[in-house]
Image (cartoon, rainbow, N blue to C red):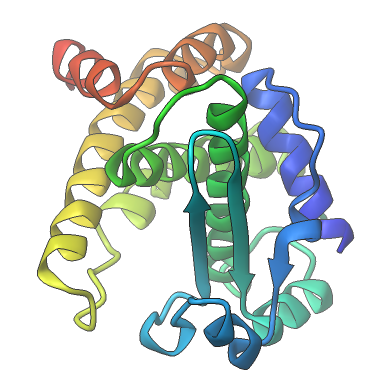
Length: 219
């Protein structure tokens, strides 16, 4: 799907990471097929899941994105116009692509990734890439409400187990603090170019490094 290829390219250019694989080669859009592979899409309201298996020598990935959701994104392409009607679906698709790129890059670097680290980075990706797209589509203007839309308004899926719910809440909290700093230091001044080195340094930190960076520079 061209949209997912473009999203993957946008993530990789933002963080200056190379990836020989395409997310669509690992994509499953049928819930029944996803269930046979070990995923449980019916238990997740978001329409996105990533399954990781394997060992140190080989990592197997499956990315589930709901087919109906992708059809809606084809009809209202966020790469042309991102708006209230396609924003939630855009974030869901981007989360799947973000997970895929981060997992593949980490595997190629020989790095282990925690679930919290994966979710934290995906939340940052959603804020940064949404701001990038909206600015490109609206003459550089980024809605002031973007941070609130992404970090204050969403709730935690009540179907999630307690451990998963706590992990998502922590990822949202840490990413929200980090992205508030990005907004204060760079976006309010329209200085996205100066933000890129900071984003790339942050991307390459592990969970401990990311959290230390956030707590040190907390807003």
